[in-house]
Image (cartoon, rainbow, N blue to C red):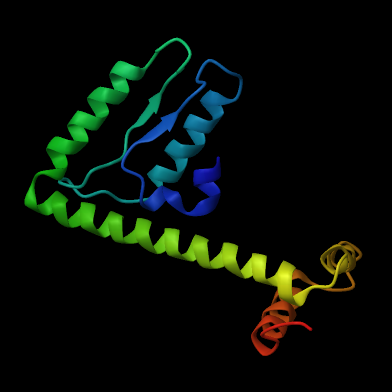
Length: 150
């Protein structure tokens, strides 16, 4: 599910649903499939397969190895090489944005917010006294104008 929320759908080469023997795994596969169906894939483009595994028993590991081999073969062609480079660029961009987001949140906690202030802001959002977009904008402005709190 983290992939569905984090924008990973556009950059994954293979989706692996581990613990496929547990409740909810079929729903997750269906959710991934539904998201993939929203994208269009050309005849020569790689469409990421969804592989179900159970690591504790080894179930599905052969299917995963086969999917990796198919991807490597496909990635060897010139056209798919361009698509692979595009996906790698998207991966790198997503990683960069995640790192910047993490660093920003750490800076907020360390240098901008007083103890308990984040909780108070969330309380105001819950009470509908403040909307999340305004709160985020205010926090961003404070972080940018206040390099270090004394």
